[in-house]
Length: 440
Image 1 (cartoon, rainbow, N blue to C red):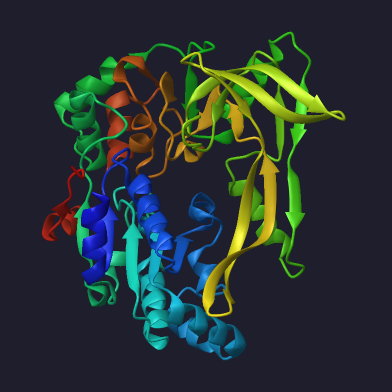
Image 2 (spheres, rainbow, N blue to C red; image 1 turned 90 degrees about the vertical axis):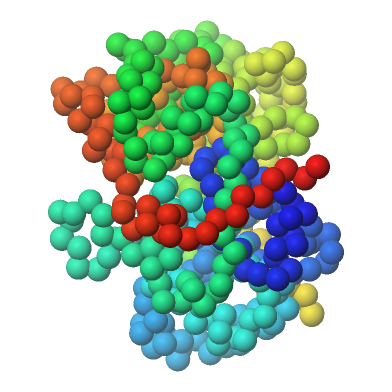
């Protein structure tokens, strides 16, 4: 797949899409790694603050110097006050070979036009690769929306500039997360809003009358409150003393806005304060090649200290393998010119163990995870695509259960959270998508 995608990028801009678990992130990282190995300059951006955390801490707004502007008219006025910054941006774009934007579904049409305006003003000649799935995570609502209609979005593909990029549309279709074809087909139908009798019967069959929490199961909730409550309850049952690991936050840029730093920390998958005990079940929140993956579970066997500080945590994974987990560093970055080259520089960093208590997780923070034993509490799912995101975290449907305890009939509730915007459906139907296969 990588070689095919690299060939396409030699000639075209790319929109890389596909449902959850097909390997979009993995392939994107492989592309970035390849470009960097050839000493090419790559700028990797997140569509929002949260998406930016996933890709290294730089957001579209921050890189392109958009400030708080939401349309071209505002931007042109704002630009008169920041000519020096725009000069720096042009220098960076002059040497940039590839711009990658993750979670493109959260970019509005107005923002897409602003990105195009920046690239055209700078006479950008590199490639652009957009990554994401428009069936998940919609952008902000259209201006003037009264809130009564479910779908009032202006997506990136609605922008006047989308066609100017002449994207080659690539869709990944082979699931890397689950090998169960029936489950994969059901998820595929859910993703596109098809709640047929077959889909409803399948989901109904996964229902349980209550959430039975055991040491080997993770419960996904729609809200932070329930997740925190269950994690604290399960932790308090363990007899071992409570240990507290505080994150180390370092600031390297004295001009960094405190609110921006706080927002970045809140979006991280590593907590500022991690409360753990020996015997606690934890989940890894990052991938470490050959050791653990994002969503993998384990149990704390030992907590090693040095001068009273927690130095490392010994975790036995579900497969029996024992790993020593040290703190990971997460950087809030910006791109700067270093001579003739583009460099990513940390403005601040947070260093913490890449672990969370595994008894409960919010759907929001489960993005990118593959979870073995899963219960999805569907009582507080409101956002479009959340049900699909929750169920598609499961590796094995035999180890997936669903709890719903509201008075509203289950079928009616499902119909309200599975609706899909016709604009998105139309976009995928009317455009040509090329499926690329595994490299042989």
